[in-house]
Image (cartoon, rainbow, N blue to C red; front, side, top):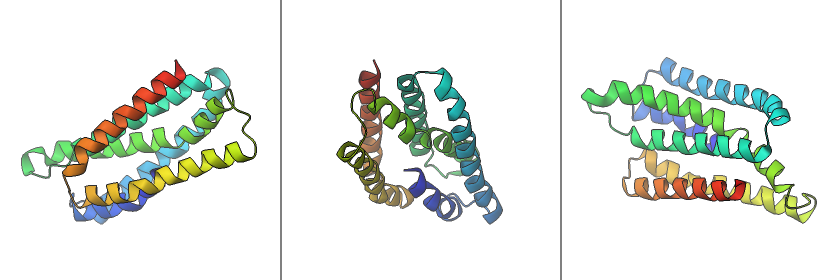
Length: 168
């Protein structure tokens, strides 16, 4: 989801949220900086914390960022400045939460399966097909189609519940 998001975030920030080009570029850079911090810190966290707890931590961060990003759609002058700040925070949180999820998911899966051959292929295929399914969703969000908002929130809550029961 992260790779698709950063490709859309600049255009969305400039075209819909009316950010300046410099501010939109800073938003994109902040996303990558958050990814870098998360990937670097997850190396040390993985040595100290159980992989199930890491998956839950980053999964909750992903759900919170999705909620923030889906809730800051208003561009009316009375809420725009607050929504722009929340949009920036949500983008950074998405970058931080999204990058270690795949590694944490593989680490948890190795406790149940031997991640070789076909299992690793199925896991990677599921990861990439999940990312591809976001194309239409992100496109509709950019075009402000309200019908996807409830579905997206339900899907994120469902993912959170599934992660919780997988971990505990």
